[in-house]
Length: 165
Image 1 (tube, rainbow, N blue to C red):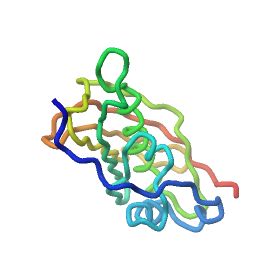
Image 2: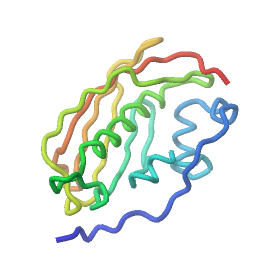
Image 3: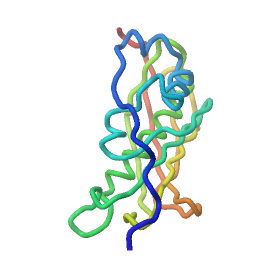
């Protein structure tokens, strides 16, 4: 059986020049990505997910598990869930950054609860900041289906530093 959920319409993907990125604070950048002036990440187009919500300390990505994401044993590869959660957790932290700041993931810890398949339908990865310090931040998040069933949960630690143009 194949899911009746239709993937979202095509989206614009790309990477802005660094000076354009640095003209935004984190939350404004994410909101512009949702609205369209800032493109979604190229990886989001490759894997079939997108940023759909952002507020201070929180980010939500939605993805559609498909057959193209399958591993050799007939389920969606764990990298799909990991990519959604890494994006949500990192962007939750990004939403707290001032203009001129950057961040990178230092650690990602992921727990899979159940397998995804193309029959799962759309899934949402929500990231929430746990702690935001001057140079280190942590966030947590989960990956759930439309009915709220948990598929994976994760935590991350990110380093915050001045961006270099």
